[in-house]
Every structure is written in C-alpha cells, then in structure tokens.
Amino acid sequence: MYSYSEISFSYPIARGSPTLILLVISPLLLGDEISYLNNIGALILICGIFFLIFSEGNYKKINFKGLGLSLMVASTIVVYTLVDAKGARLSESAISYGIYMFAIEGITFNIAYVLFFKDKKIPFQFILKEKYKILLASILVTFAYLPILYAFTKVNVPSVAALREISILFTSIYGVYFLKEKFGLIKVISAALVVVGCIIIRIAAG
Image 1 (tube, rainbow, N blue to C red):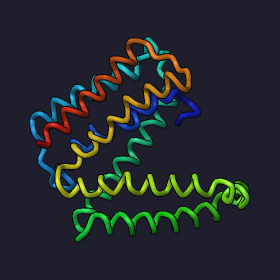
Image 2: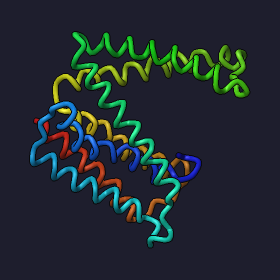
Image 3: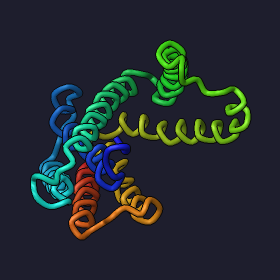
Image 4: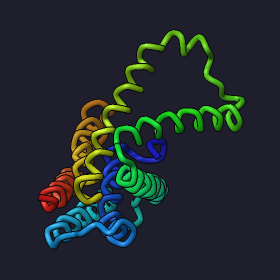
C-alpha cells in the first residue's frame, strides 16, 4: 500500500473507512445499537475521506492503485475487527481470548512464512542481533490490542474502532515531518474531518 501512495493519503483511507463500514455491518452481524450521533459522525468521516481521494486535484489525478490497496486493507481490518469483537464477547475473558489469539497467529504466520516465502527467509543472525527490538515490538503490539478487545465487550464496535483512528492525525503529521510528503490544505481538511468524525462516533457511545 505504502509503495504506491503516500502514507498521508493511504493511511487515513485504510483506517478511517472501516469505522464507516462497521457502522453499517455491526448492527446486522453483532446486534450493536447505533445512535443518530453515530450517523452524523459517519457523514463527517465520509466527507474527510472524499476530500482526501481528490486531494491531488481533478478526477484524472486520483491515485486509483493506492486507493484500491487502501480499501483492501480497510476490508481486512473490518473482518478481523468483527471476528475479534465476537470472540471477545463470547469468551469469558477478553484478555484470555487475546492471549490465545496472538499465540495461534504466531504459529500460523510462521508456518505460512516457511511454506510460501522460502526464498525470503530472515537470517537467524538478524534475529539474534535485533532480538530486543523484536521482543519490545511484540510486547507493545500485545498490550496495545488487549484493551481494545476488552472495550469490545463494553461498547458498540464502531465506537471502539473510531477511537483507534485518532492515529490518523498522528500518521499524517509523521508523513509530513519525517517522510517529507506534501501536505496541502485539502489534506489538512481531510485529516481533520476524519478525526472529528471518529471522535463524534466515539462520543455517541456515551
């Protein structure tokens, strides 16, 4: 995704779109109750994404490849969010569910890597050299997601997903200051609308 578009373009679409999709799907699949304020937030979020898609100007300048890949990532996020929300709610403990989930994912992805990426094996020396960074990243990922699983058991899924998307603003800033991407007025407005929409959806949860 990031190979074909700037992070300030692709990330807000990939992370903002799932909140919108979940507003429609979660009441049908999970029985979540969605309020009027949720819908207002969704409309603002749609506007933000729409502005971002046309941030380069007219229709001919739209980065369709980057847009398509971003929407594919968004679809993946929707699927795993629904699965994890259902799993956390059915489990007696969301934390236990999360620990088992990460363990199974680790085994599954390692097997898949060995089977399908034989020509791209990571040298063992690299793993030894970077073992502390790898361990730290693993711990941070685990403890960043466990509270989200717990939140799924307390409020509707779109509200939890929306709260996570505040990262859109920080990622856009990262793209500008660290990756030296162009960040014109339209992108500023787009990122702001996406964040505001997500905040309103979160507030609607009460």
